[in-house]
Length: 77
Image (cartoon, rainbow, N blue to C red; front, side):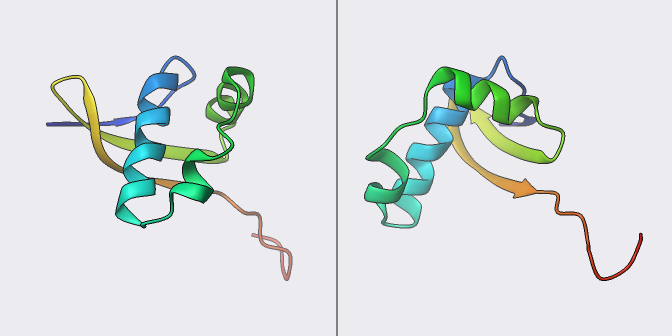
C-alpha cells in the first residue's frame, strides 16, 4: 500500500476516493448522485488549501482523507 497526496493528475484516484466515502459513510446520494466535472476536480486538486490523501493498493484507491485549510478570522496568525 502507498499513501499519496493527490495532485491535479490524480482525477481517477479522487473519483475512487469519493466511491470509498460513499460506501464507508453509507451516503451514496451525497457522494455519487451529482459527480463533479473533470474541470472542477482539477481546480480543486490545484488549490493548495485543499488536501486529499489516498491509500493506493494495486492501482486502486482503498481509503483516504480530505481536508481544507481555513484561515482564522478572530486574530492574525
